[in-house]
Image (tube, rainbow, N blue to C red; front, side):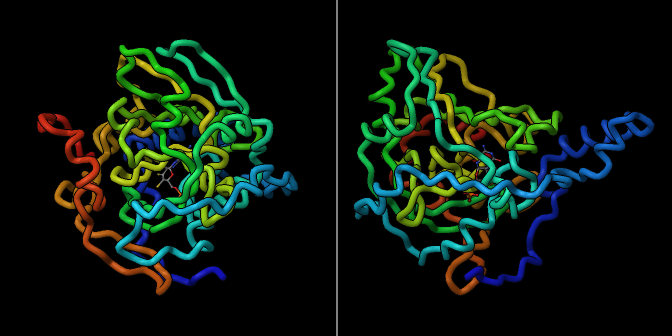
Length: 329
Ligand code: MTE
């Protein structure tokens, strides 16, 4: 059952999309006004014009792994968001810049799926997703999820601590950051044909953040393999940070000395920074972050935003002495 919720509050594309992207697009369209690309592009306000979703009959070979045991250390102060909502209201720009991308995302083949480890590691390697999963300690955690656009959900992820993946990857001592990268295939992800975006989607964490107990790689959702639209087969969950840090469809983990520049940071670093920690007192340049619109079983409810999205106890110490960094954008 899809819960019907009044969506009047939603940010228009122009608000939720960095201004620079709009500016670039406008300039681009102006420049192309008489060019042949406009003919193709004019029908594509953003990710419009995508073809019908291709049916995907691939059965997820990890289905038998779920449900996994819940870790009681990670519980919620609110009810879970209905599964139908969390799996049909998404952000995944590879498949379009609107919320209803779940059908488009079914085009993504998730087997075979190879994960690469490189950069500052003892030994670079590649491993198939099923071999990787067999080595990881799976558990379920209930996490809050807070998008920078001010909507929020509460969901059950299955997966493993990112720390377990770090131990598997064996980074060298001089690795300071973990860079994560999404797949690239513009045959299935037509959003990636939008060349004004800096594909592939990249995200990064400091090694200390990556090793924090809360940092989690989700492989399951609501007691089942995680759906493609939510980031199958590997997706990051760092619940004290805004949702855009939660990179989906990960194919690469790279250990670096220099801080990675993420997808959104490259587009609009003044609006979507590297740290992106949730703080009700630090507004986004174009809207307040004081409250969130929580989607629960009874529909949408406005709740006050919490510092570090309610996870200060676990993560505040990561940022001691860093007051000069823009930690909350
Ligand atoms: N990962 C990739 N590769 N591409 C994206 O567009 N969107 C991010 C994040 N991960 C995104 C992504 C944003 S803005 C949010 S809020 C969350 O995914 C949304 O996750 P959900 O759709 O599973 O709720």
